[in-house]
Amino acid sequence: MPSAGTADLVIVANRLPVDRVTLADGSPGWRTSPGGLVTAIEPVLRANDGVWVGWPGGTEQDLQPFEFDGLSLVPMTMSAEEVKDFYEGFSNGTLWPLYHDVVAKPEFHREWWDAYVGVNQRFAEKAAELASEGATVWVHDYQLQLVPQILRSLRPDLRIGFYLHIPFPPAELFQQLPWRRQILEGLLGADLVGFQMNGGAQNFVRLVRQRVGHKTHRDLVYLPDGRTVKAAAFPISIDAKGFEELARSERVEKRAETIRDALGSPRKVFLGVDRLDYTKGIYARLRAFSELIIDGHFDVEDAVFVQVATPSREQVEQYRILRDEIDRLVGHINGDLGRIGRPAISYLHSSYPREEMAALYRAADIMVVTPYRDGMNLVAKEYVATRYEDDGALVLSEFAGAADELRQAWLVNPYDINGMKSALLEAYAADERERGRRMKAMRKTVLQHDVAAWADAFLLELAAARGAHGKTVRP
Ligand code: ADP
Ligand code: G6P
Image (cartoon, rainbow, N blue to C red):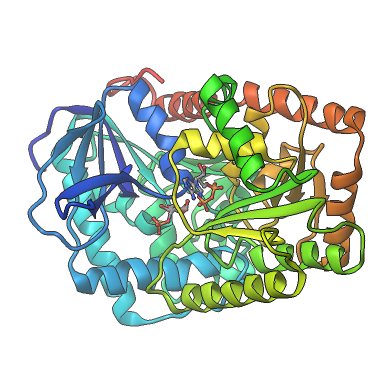
C-alpha cells in the first residue's frame, strides 16, 4: 500500500477547473474550462478543504501542483497519443455517443481502450498518493470509470464515491460495449455510485446483476467480499443564489440593456447557449426558429435568435462536421431572411465570464434548450436562477435531465420540428401572467435544490455508506 498523503478530500475529474492557454502576449496563462462538470464542482471544492486532480488540456509535461483563486489543483499530464486515444477516442468517440442514446455512432477500437485503462491507472495512482488515511475521494464522470476499482486496490482504507454527470444508458445500448464488464467492475470499486436520474441508477444495478452476476436488492449491490455498493440518483444543480445575486447587480443589468440595444432592440430575444455538441440539438432549433419567420409568424424586426456555441472537442470528426453544418445553416438563414443590420441569428463562438453569461440570460425573453439527450443541462437552471422578477420563458427538451424538475417549462420533443415550432411560438406569445406562473414555480425548485444541497446529499450518503470509520468530510 502506498504511503498516505495529507488531503482529506480529493476530487478526481478529467478536467481541472482551468485550462492552460497562451495569452495575447505569448505568455502561458489559465482560462476557465468549459462544461457543466466544472460549473458544479468548483463551489463544492471551495466549501471544503481539498485538492482537485485533473487535466489542464494540452500536452505540456512539466506542470506542478498550484493554487488558483484559492483552489488547490494537481495537474495530470497527457501525451499527444493519450489525448488522441483516451480523450478524443475512447472518452468522446466511444463513451460519449454510446451514453447519449447513440445520437452519433460510437466507434470501438482496442487501442483506444488500452489508452483508457492506462490513463485511469495514472489518475488512480495520483489520488492514492494525495489522499490521507481514511480520506474521501470523489471521482467524476465517464472518462474515469475504472478509477474506483484501481484506487480501492491501492488504498482499501479510502471512502470512494463516483458520480456520473452524463446519462447512464439502457442495457440494450450499454451491451454493445466490448469492455462492458470491465466498466461495471471499475465502478463497483466505489462505495456509492451517483447518477443524474433514477433510470440511470436502475440501468446500472440491472446490468451488474445480469453481466457481472452479483446479488442486488433495490439500489444495493452485494459483492462477494462482503462490501456493499449503493447506486442512487442525485440530480445535479448550480449555485443558484450566486447566479441570482450576479443577475441583480447593476453592472449585469446595464450590460443586459446594452446587449438588447446592440441587437437593435427587437421585441423578443431568443437565446441558446451550448457547447458545440451534436447532443444539444442546435441545428433543429435554429431551423424551427427560421421556419417561424418564413411562415410569417414574426419577422426579424420582432425577434432575433442569439446562439452562443463554444467550440468543443474540435479534433473529433463528428464535432467538426457539426460545426460546418451549423456554420452553413446560419449563413443560409441570415442570407435568406436577414436585413441590413438585422440578422435573424446572431451566432457567437466565444467563451464568456460568468457575469456576461448572466447578462445574456437577463437579456433573453425566451431561453431555448433542446438537447436530444442531456444528463441534466445546467444552462436551463442558470437561466431560471437569473429571472428574479419571475419573467422570461424556458423552452426545454423532454430528454434533458432538467425536464424532470422544471416541469413548468414549455417541454418539447426535439425530434419533432413542428412541435418545437409550436412551443417556440407559444412561449413567444405567452402573456405576462402565464410566464410568471411558470417561472415562479421553476425558480422555487432551482433555489431549493442548489449545488450545495446536491453535494451535501451525496457526501452524507457516502459517509453513511461505509459506517463510522474514516474521516468525515463536512459537506
Ligand atoms: P455541458 O456540461 O454538456 O456543457 P451544461 O448545460 O450542463 O452542458 O453546462 C454548461 C456550462 O457551461 C454552464 O455552466 C454554462 O454556463 C457554461 N457555458 C456554456 N457556454 C459557455 C460560454 N460560451 N461561455 C462561458 N460559459 C459557458
Ligand atoms: C460535459 C462532461 C464533462 C466535460 C464537459 C466539457 O459536461 O460531462 O465531463 O468536462 O462536458 O467537455 P470537455 O471534453 O471539454 O472536458
